[in-house]
Length: 163
Image 1 (cartoon, rainbow, N blue to C red):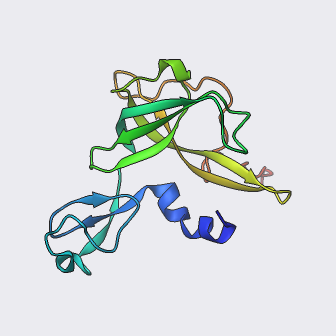
Image 2: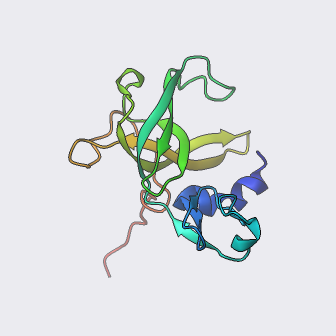
């Protein structure tokens, strides 16, 4: 994916921003301009509105990747899952902060934003969503190992001298 395309898609990647049809109520991720669910697709033209997904969901299927694509070979084995959100869309994403063998269908998860990859010698870092498990109370358990910075949250703070 080109850097330009990646940055155009940043709002969707960082915010899980989708769209909702005001005719039938169906939610989409990524966002759509026309609703394919409506009997006449023309009904939904200019009737799609931005919609924010909650980021929570449930694993409905998954696989454990042992032979990774180029650039992901240091992460194997890792779990890649299909997550159904309460709003309806099914998202695909890596399931992190859990051993791949512990992932199961029905596991409750929440989206978290993490480093996806670094591009080339320039070191451009791409962030996106992954899923981390929730415990039975709906709370994120402590991370199991190093976790990358969260954009906008874990940025280094400037030292301030006393005035």
